[in-house]
Image 1 (cartoon, rainbow, N blue to C red):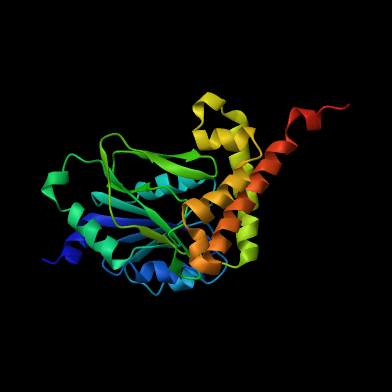
Image 2: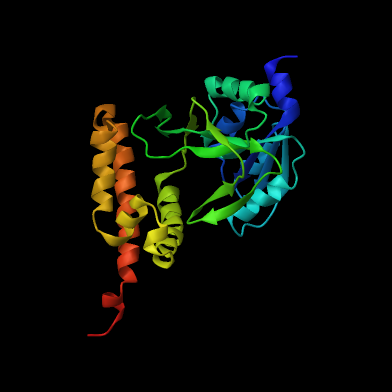
Length: 267
């Protein structure tokens, strides 16, 4: 039995979609080593569903969107394989990562592990960057051990048990138009601002405390990407990514200022 045949029998990829015609075919093309892919669609009105129909290994379930965590938990309830690989519709699994995944889930030495965190590399115009800020995420885990919860605009799985980190990265390769990205940032950051406003500072990470209490976060994000992470050496792609991160942090800061007591209290 080949590695891909073994993985196909014990691993299901779980993907959420909503109007992902710009990305979903590339994501699925990088999952041809799997024969079990479950897509939870939130009412796509573009070509997403017709693209999904071209892939025999894909099963589609439909559910109106309420939150990312609830969508993922609904998907987990439909999966029977021992392992789950949770992906966004713009994530790519390069061959080196596919090989590593297939190896670790078959390794008897990992039988006590609950899952694996996978690093990320952000792509601009299809090229992976070294200067990305995305942290590793628990994307590969044993089914039945954990459930998802919302965390700001995102979601994460609460997974009891030891977690190991893989070496090879997922590529985050979103090629939707800039206008769609801008609209998404507005929605996402409104949720993120609410999280920062309502969470006591002592419960926040150092980065989130910086975002909540000072105007420095947008400029820190720009300098971190360009200088510390070397984005200035990656040409225009590095600058695009750094400015995206600065824009997002600046918008978040403005949203937090809008709710500041000194702005809402009459003179």
